[in-house]
Image (tube, rainbow, N blue to C red; front, side, top):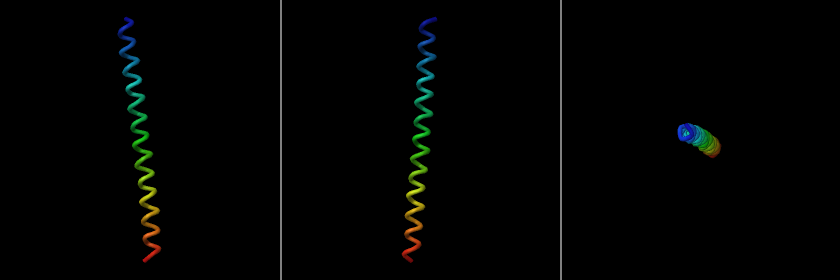
Length: 47
């Protein structure tokens, strides 16, 4: 039974890592979108 618990814990850690990755990816996408918006706005002001 001890080995089974280890596997379960490993899976949980893997899941936690995966959600962290997703969160990072989402925040990165958000940052990029924000940068692009600022860039577009400054580009529009120049014209």
